[in-house]
Length: 501
Image 1 (cartoon, rainbow, N blue to C red):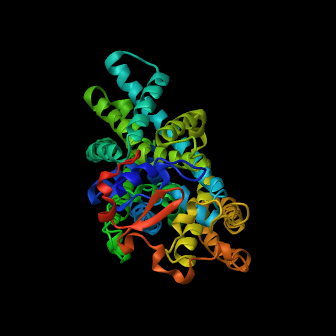
Image 2 (cartoon, rainbow, N blue to C red):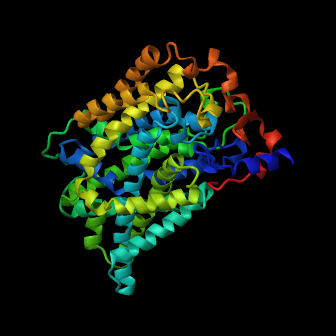
Image 3 (spheres, rainbow, N blue to C red):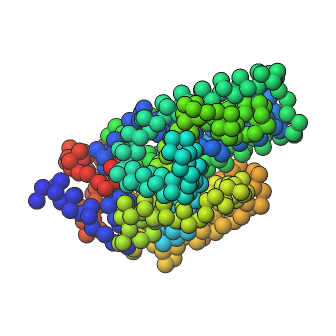
C-alpha cells in the first residue's frame, strides 16, 4: 500500500474525537487563493443587518462620511484580530472546534463550540428567511405565486446542497455572487441618493437628532463580526499557504486582502447605503424602500441582490461553522454532509422570523460570550504555546488536553467570568470580554492548571516539532491514532480528496 493510499484509508476512520472533515487539512488540500478568499468575504459582509449599523450612526447625529469612516476603521480592527486567529488554520490546518480542545479540554470544547454553532445555525435561518421573502417577491411578479414558506424550503435546500459539496463549491458561488453584489449595491446607492435629492436633502450634510458617540458606533461594529473572528480557522485552513513560510506575513499573505480590505470596504459600503436610506426616507432598510417604489426589472434586480447576499453569507459564515461544531460533538455518527443538513434544520427550528424581532439584543449577548472565547484563543495560541501546538494530542482521550476528565477549568472559568461581565455591559462587550478572557485564562493556567500537572504541560521548550506549515510540513493522520508531520512531496496531497473540499 502506498503512502497516499494509507492516508486515504486512515481519513475514513471515525472515533469519538476524529472524523475526516475535522482532521487537519494538508498543504495540498487548500484551494482558496488570494482573490477567491477575498470574494468569499465580500459575500459574507453583505447582510441585511449591516444596513442598520449605518442608519443608527446617521440617526444618532453622526455625519454620513464619519459613519462610513468609523465603520471602516472598526472593521479594519476586527479584521486585524481575524488575521491573528487565522494563523491557527494556515499553520496547523485546524478547525475552530478542534482547536478549542486545547484551551477547554477534549470534552470541554463542546460548551463554547456549540454556543457558536447554534448562533451560526440561527443566522442561517434568519438569512434564509430574508432570502425567502425576496424569492417570494420574485415569484409574485413572474408567477403570481405567494407563499414564503415554500420559498424558504427551496432556498434552504439549495444552500445546504451547495455547501455540502465542499469549499470549492462555496468559492465558485462567491466568485459569481460577489461582483454582482457590488454592482447592485452601487446601483442602490445612486437610486437612494436620487430619492434624497428630489426631496432637497444633501446626504453629506444631513444631521440626525440622536446622540450616538463615535465610541459606541465603533464598538458596535467590532462586536458585529466577533463570531467570524473566533472561528475563522474554519475557512483559513483551506487558504493556499507556502510550505516553509516561517514569517507571519508570508504565511498569511493570502489572508490580508480579505480581512483588511474586502471586509472593511464592503461593510462600510453597505452600512453607508443604510445611512443614505435612512436620510432619504427615515427607513434604514433600502430593500424595503426601493421595493416599495420599484417595479419591473429594477425590482427583480433588487430582490436578486437579497438572495445572493443571504446565500453567499450563509455558506461560509453560518453553515460551515455550524456543521463543524456538530461534527466535533459526535464524529462517530455525523459527517460533513449530515452536519451541514443538521445546521439547516436547527436554524429553522429556532424560528428565525421571531429572532428578528429582537435581533440586536440577541447580537449583544452572544457577542459578549464569543468575545471572551477570542481572548482565550489568542492567549492560548500565542502567549502560552507560542504557536507550538501538540496537534496529535487533540485527537487523544488520554493526552495533554484531557485535563480534569476532559475539561479544562481554566478555560471554562475564564469564559464564564469574562463572558458574564461583558454581557452585563453588552454595549461595550467586545472590548471587555476579549481582554478579561485573555488575562484571566493565562492567570488560571499558570496558577491552577499547569503547576504539578505534567500531563497538561505546554510543549517542552516550545520546540519547532510542534509547528507545521512553518516547517514545510502538514499534520498527516496515518490511522489508529497515529499522526506524523510530512512534506507535500511525501504524501502527494493533490491526490488525496476530502468530503469538505
